[in-house]
Image (tube, rainbow, N blue to C red; front, side, top):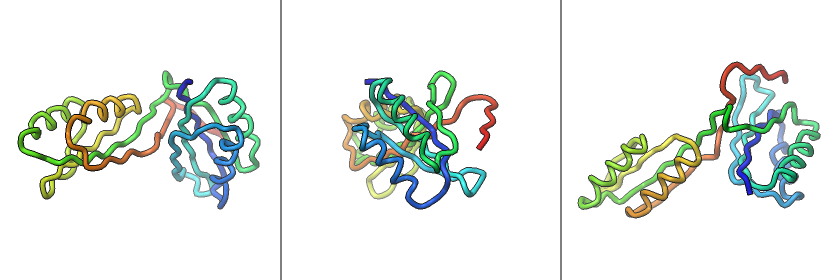
Length: 164
């Protein structure tokens, strides 16, 4: 099973997200993350969907989603030519004995400490999904109180002009 990423530009109407999600359900395809955001045009929204599966099923989902009336543009994101990033927030118990090692590991990953309150420490990392996976694995030996992770956002490198 291969991780796949697609971007859709859709009309900013009620129910569009439900129709897109139902296509995935009908095909038995899981959505690993889904991020919606406005675009420069208030009538158009951008959806970034991360999923995993075989090439054939992914191709079918792309075709079916492209047929929705509200879909203005859809494309597969190739990691070689694109940036794919997420944000993770992780809250730790900042016990004295582990504090130095934890802070060092946070620095190694290029994460930053965004809060230190009442014996807790919150680290933020914005990076590729793979790098965040590695960070979460490496810090799992410390006492994690809670963590949250955004969905992926993706953008092609260089000058790309989308005609919507």
